Length: 41
Image (cartoon, one colour):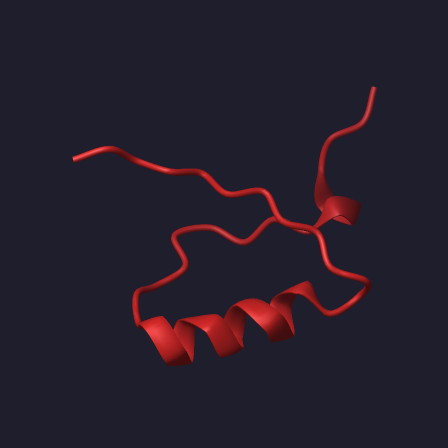
């Protein structure tokens, strides 16, 4: 089975949106990485 790695960006409410989508479609978050937590050079 193929694996997808979605990168979506919402105007300040991404986690809220994903939580809603998870409640509708089911599944789980394997990882949640906020932009502010990404390593920068």
